[in-house]
Image (cartoon, rainbow, N blue to C red):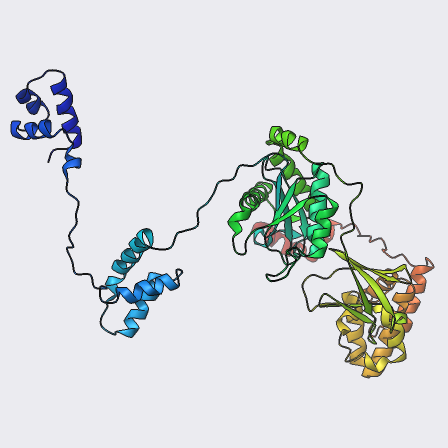
Length: 501
């Protein structure tokens, strides 16, 4: 079979004035074949006729109308699903080996007659015009703080022209986290972009059908910074492509740096944040020229940040608790029946009563959790000690494991009511005086082997510590060991036997 290269070489030799028979011989053709390609002036591949006939009977011909209707109505249907459906409808008609034939047939139909596919349109980015942000989960990297798993997210902000980026640690995709992250980003950047784009976050974007596209709080945030808010279409993450791709690259960089570091554990959250800041500084350092161009095009920042909190009003229940975002928090029992205003920040709550701050509480993560402070309800428990044994939030009444050990010991030696009274008296001492000193008193009593640690023993030990009659951390003296004592364990005869053997 003559190849295209042979035909090209023949043509070249003839153009150089060589005879046909000589040229045919040198290109490996007979003279008749060479004459054919000379006269036609076309390559062998151009003379081939296309394969237009079917070599096998199409097994899906009779059901093709039904198949075409199915994939036209539901474009997402896979060939395997349709094939299994046909096997159920007509048992024995189709064999497993025919699946590939159906896949090729459907693939050709979609390429030639099917609905048009989404087209990716590359975008031109301009300095200072567009920023994007999104949340990304970091749990899969296995980061720990003080050897404890640190479940968290990052709010990730980028400028699409220069790829300048920054992150904020957060624990939920709340508006407070979004507001904190956005404001920290633009103040760190030193200016405000013209537009800001997010995905369809429920904290920023209203559900379809709502006359307002963006929530009031998010619209107010964007208005404060004079930024035009934008959103992508639902389930179209590619429209937020710059930040989505940056998620992948940034997390990969974090993972690599953790490998170099040799540990995924950090002593504190501050250490972890410093680790991220150093990474960001290095990553943004390679974009210095583009960042400087972008910063010149940014708008001026407003005079101040706005507070990132949600203000809610709650009545304190008879249980001395309030419900905030599906989590329960205790307040001082004096506030039962009163209405309080709660500022819900990203990581803490501020409880206001009569325009004064009465409580600052760390915000719980997730839902269905509770945070009960024993100091808030100890007076009520002292009046009703019988309620303690089956109290719903009893586990929150043990500040440390040592307090729990004391209660367990009392429960074995006293009746439930008497054990509760004794323990609550100890807890009251911790609430009204010093939890740390009471815990130290219990530690010393446990160390000395006191059988029953009751309120009297704890109070006496507490007073001794408080008045300085006893050291909280007594010095430990280890007597110097004399190695010669070891020889006294053996008689002279035994020692000689050991040396000889």
